[in-house]
Length: 252
Ligand code: E4P
Image (cartoon, rainbow, N blue to C red; front, side):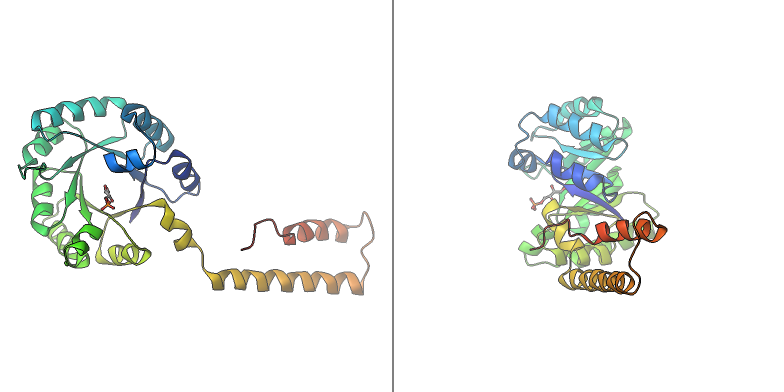
């Protein structure tokens, strides 16, 4: 399973990318606006350069299908790792499957977005979308179970050997992340504010604190029993241990 960041915040993306857990980035016009990226081309090019070979999804901003195709072709020239997000329908409910199919035939990677049902997902996959973005939070907003949709779409893709990958987005809680991962998402696109909650645990901190305290006690035992002579091998061993035990991270 891959992890994407659902963000346009360069600094935050860079921080997590350097920790080896980020396989791509997804954006949409609302995320770009929220993260202060008003110049789409400049922001997208910057993210693409940071992410190197990893995909960066950028969404078209028109209801007109001919214009979507034009925008997608322009976006695709910005960087080789651009993926173009096309909604499954425009805001009038008109099908965008033709747009998805034609761009896919041109060799442009398409992420079909705003998918809220099984039927939308299978049509997007049939049209050739590389990614189908299932919006878990918005499915739940409507009183439906995102886990069932994700599980069914995954089973259907596997049954027919289709290569489209499920991205689960619209994540609202850490529990949504766990549920989507277990339901069979190929990719989760996670808002970065959830990552500290995923990595941290109060009892892990307590555990590490206990280990550090016991290591400190062991060091005291050694030094009490046998004073360490300056310049000796024992002192060389103790120095890194002492410095490793100095608290560096702020403790809440
Ligand atoms: C991801 O690709 C989507 O654009 C995003 O997750 C939508 O999330 P929202 O429902 O919080 O707007």
